[in-house]
Length: 484
Image 1 (cartoon, rainbow, N blue to C red):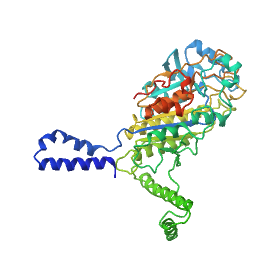
Image 2 (image 1 turned 45 degrees about the horizontal axis):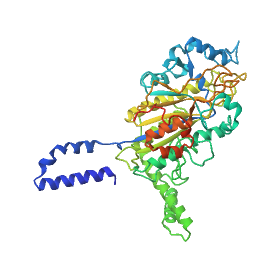
Image 3 (image 1 turned 90 degrees about the horizontal axis):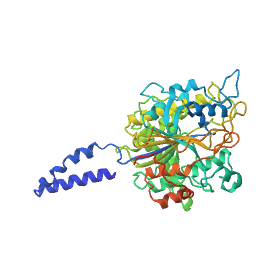
Image 4 (image 1 turned 45 degrees about the vertical axis):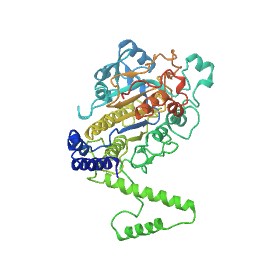
């Protein structure tokens, strides 16, 4: 029974006693509470984080481009000139006139977003530029794994100050997931969930739910991700349906679950299996056609959008007071691969960066619309992670692994329409870059993650420093992009 149902019942019992005792007049001002309690259909105080992982290293310097002429000229030169399939096939710069429709303002000058970030179908399906201009999207500049703030001179003189295994996909992804630069089996999302899951009604369902497969990010001390696919749950083979053979198998399985076993390991396995089966039955009911977890918003039919649609559906049923999940805190993980574009980065085909930016922009726009449909835009914060950005300079047909990048934060409680962190001087081998335009980050993963953890309710400095051991090395543990 939910806490809300119990409170409502107690209130009505006390009201009846007061009326019988002649004390109704003292409670009449509270009668309005009955209607408000009955009208409460979603879990109060709900909050969720949604991590969108762009696997392979997103070329973020073509997502956010300096637009004022002087800095654009530096960008163009460092990106080996404007791409032209005939005259400059190795160029990685976007023509400035192609950026004119996606201009945004930011600290230090004007910027533009990739031309693929325009609206999908107008205001009902906004792209990244519209979300930014509406104050619902922010960018965090030149961010990456750091042990402590590091200058270019220190980078060259003291290798121990560099995060381990720079430029390695698997290692850098791991550092983003764990929020530290030393080995750990736990991710920062899972550790946040450990601390904020207390008020979730259904503790059997993990507060960490992955639609993007197994990941370190959502693993905590007492939290492990519940995995689903973008199409929902997968039942046991041969156990579903109405056939007599399926019914017989289900009956045999139930006999195994009802039996007692001498080994504690067998008993624990039975208990875990039974919980998983009950959870499958519960969630299947909510996600079936016509169930409480359906949304009407039209999503593009592609991998990332389909994953985010399932996230929206799970959020809808998880915060509904009429359904037996009733979570107050959740963390989701979705994933889009294909960003390791050593070749054909500027291709106009489906494998080029432009096509991927279209997919990201349209998927996030549809997700934002779906959150509006279910009334959760202020309760959900979506952010991107990627192991690194790409080199500014070309390798002849694409770009290579780099370091500092740009990430996005989207939500109704985001102080959007702003850039956070210093946008770097894009001169090759400049003050904060190496020879090919690999930027030394000025903002750490720890700072962005701690800001999100704080919004979720992890406010203790001790807790934040435990999750992010390098956090005390930086001047601030809150970048300011979240409202309370």
